Image 1 (cartoon, rainbow, N blue to C red):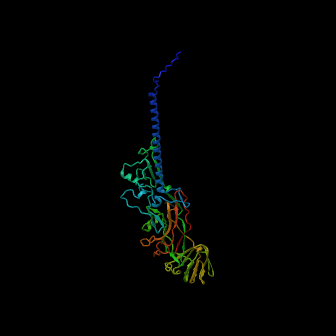
Image 2 (tube, rainbow, N blue to C red):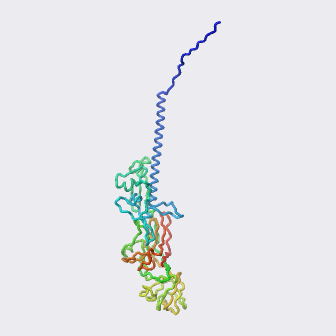
Image 3 (cartoon, rainbow, N blue to C red):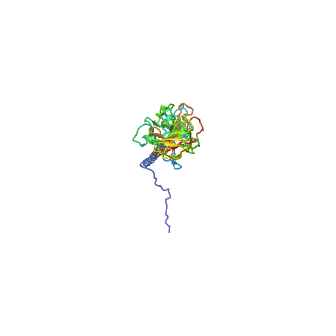
Length: 429
């Protein structure tokens, strides 16, 4: 029997061919474009935000360079720094914070130097802005001023000091144009500095009690109208100076009027004033028991010749005192308020010496941030020792620098003003 033969078709099979339709391709391209546009938008937005933050940070840096950082402390005390503290004024352009000038032709600013009379340092000690290897400090958008001179002075920032004592520094934003816009990054960004940022008002410093501490063993005198109290502050990179005439000085609010009102005896560290025979006037209400003179509050007036020291040899000299006991030479006699002295030692304890009243002329002095001092200076107009720090003598320069120390203190904006020294003790040797 024949077997059935099965014939198999071995011709090649036709496979189904698949692909993207036109609609699918359009959809893919649309999605890819959307992703790309979204990515570009996000990247561009992030770049804008970075430039905006950079601009704000630079504005903060400029403010700190000018008035210091009120949040920084050093050894528990507010750190005093910045252009105003060193120069005593606001800068007139941003470039001053970099090299001390606004134009190349400007003179070199006064540099950081110690002033002997005041005991203070003053002057430019920048750069106050870190410009790295570049001499410009532009905003985050790299804006430039169309005026080349203005651009060189302020690096593209708008600098407005038209209001006395105030300063506004502005970035014109992404669009490089002044004024606000509907887009955040094209709006102007500014900082403002006003007097509260760099000034402190000293109230009541026109009334101070001054007590001289004569640390030497010799009697000294302060002649009538020979001295002035001075509040020392930085002015234009140097310490403020007295005018050349007494009339001019009487109008300077950081000075006192001349003092003392009479020739003033400054008792030595021993308390002993050698006296000669003669009379002197003591406060009413005083009494004498042998060699103990109990004085009332007032003034001891030594008649001319009672103290062998100029100007007391030819003129009366006074010593303000508080109530207490004074030792006088044996044999002295009291009639009313006239004490007739015998020659010898007139002993006044330091605790009995009363302070004298002085004070700067202003009762509301506006002083800039920084370190300041009070000093007693010789008032000898036209003399080589005029404005010398008083060390017990205004005719001979006994020491350079002087041995006595100024009363120094710090002023910081938006902080409580320091208490005035009362009494102000001025030590001489």
